[in-house]
Image (cartoon, rainbow, N blue to C red; front, side, top):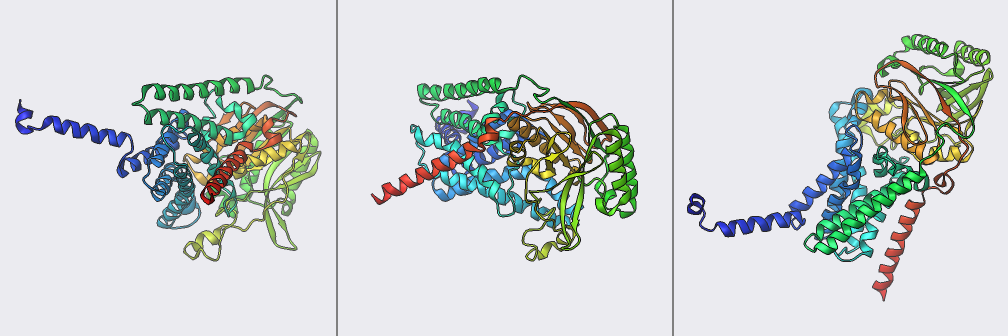
Length: 529
């Protein structure tokens, strides 16, 4: 009665409120579409570490998809896609400011600007996704157009591998599913891009079900199809899970050293011998191992410039019959060129050197060095390393597939090593740059996906953590947490199997690009006709 006195037209108010809520839920207004795109971006971010709620990868893309499908114009779809993806990177990568300001010598303001610039750059792939989806002219009841939405997502993810400064396949959506039971095991056949396709396919069906919720029968069909895809996917993953965890080519005793050396200590030239003595003593503790692995450039010296380092490494290998893999800068005195390298000492001598093939932009070289006048400190601090020319195993007691730090995020690096005969993947890294942020667990999660794709054990030695031993199913079987000193000593399996992914490669991504090209060609032909 009181409400009626205040608002005589209460029924009309309730009706308008319900209509407004319905329009919002259906993304019928620009504000609603922006909100949905932002929610999708946040949920995608939360599917990765540190939150690591992996199942969100099956739902989050639906929010962004709903926003761009409902976009009034292609321009709006472009902006919505950019917004959603940019939000993901803003939530997931604030540690970039730590690298740029604390370790790169830049002011915090410039570090934040570079972090925003990176987020906007990566968000541009969402803009491409938005335009493609809007160009499909998706109708609620059309089926063919809906099937192209996961195709568009997969193609846009793959394009990130071809950025002008070396590619950046960090956080492929399928990688968020690394802990999702049997689901990630399908990557043995499809790679991580195939998992991204399947995740977005499930999300697309769920989104379509939401859009058609007033038509209960059609909505139920879309929901059932989403469940069916997930169930078949899980069954396939269960079949793909390897039966023999130890390996089909014997075993190897390994020791991974984590010295927990802060980045500032490595920059102090006066403490280089102290760091070497620490690594030496830790190595002697691991005398029972057949392979000892040091982290990336843990000793801030050039190996061939230091006779005491060479003498220790070669005598240790000769006396213990163990292989020793460590990182060091390599230099060519005649050309004054430098490489970030991994050395293998076996049988008392250097048996191989691997030069990093994928360099870190703004970490190991600076793209557009002359143009970055606003980042002079960063340009001065970053060395100009040369890119390696080959991805080949290091041949010691067994063939080792090396990957230095950032390289493990590229599916193509371990895949190439395994194609060449690597029986064990060895990755060395210096994650001290990232501090106590989300970056180290994110980095580790991507290494776990490489184990699944290649059906290989992976041993990972990190300066400050997270060091780990990963089995071919992507499980972390031994680890040293971030910020602790220690040694992992265990036995790993050696494998000679080659998964379909290793043999064929990123065929889901190639098929997605081909499908979009055929769709575009058909549109052009119809337009001319």
